[in-house]
Image 1 (cartoon, rainbow, N blue to C red):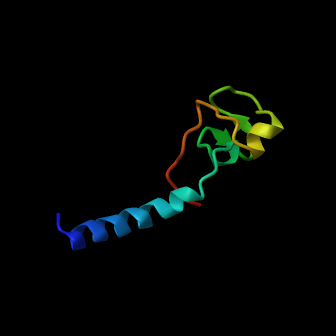
Image 2: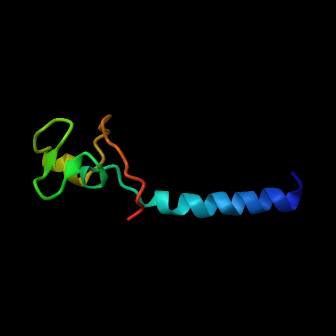
Length: 68
């Protein structure tokens, strides 16, 4: 690749990365969490309040790839 190609690819990747920067690793952004019932489909129960609001490092967290 020449310089122009590298710069173009870099800019494209930065544009793609931008929406992912705003993703929070909380229950509210997990596709396993139903915000209406507040139940996690993986654990089949209501998660603790700190999991809903903050990143607790849940290994079952899954992202639906919708950036909002």
